[in-house]
Image (cartoon, rainbow, N blue to C red; front, side):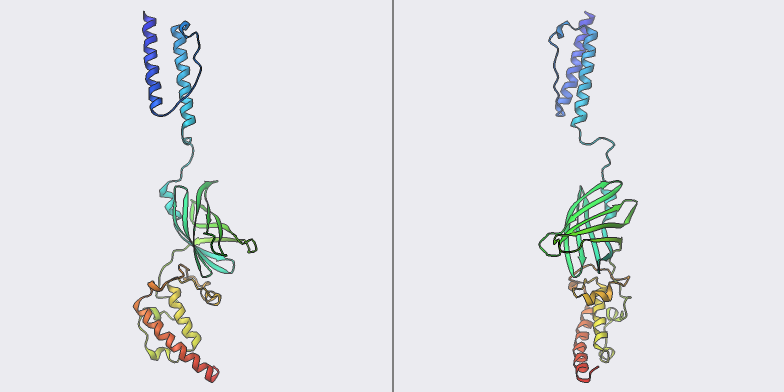
Length: 278
């Protein structure tokens, strides 16, 4: 009777365990010995212990990732958001990362008068974040960015850019974090963004100086110049960060008035220089 009681208790326990794993969607298969009715109580305990071990093994195989796998946390990924600036061939580039979560990365590349979106994947490789991001592909200057960011130093990235057009050159780059900041105290003519100019302040200026004054207003807002000669005037300046190809909505009322005034005198200066050969 004692053996029968133990057998019933073992059967009840095994059934409960089995039902628990069924509810969790874990299934397994194994062959039940045909001579199970001949098992002794001690043999039954060994059999159920073996069955339980097989269940645990099946649950491990059906699990997602082993406990040792490192998952990228949202808190850490926010550290790599922002803009990274540096040389890109003959130009200055800004890589702006706006999203980095759940294995997805999104952002923009601003360089050479172009502002292009990119999207791709982010993963961990050798202790660093490895990012591969593609530009849309509907522009002849589009390509694929591949770069890495070390979590221990999230203020720098290194990588390469592979153009879709195979006749173009692959570019390698090392960029540092530098967020755009609008400042009115930079440039040779900061007053153009600080206060409304008077006609007598600009009427005697040369056309090249007037153009410089006007373009500095745009540069303070992070305008990415399309003309190479304009880019060359600003891309070596520490305060200049290309951030957009359209800054019209960013201009202040003072700046708008000054731009109108400057353009008017640019025309006067051009006519005067043409007439007198200045």
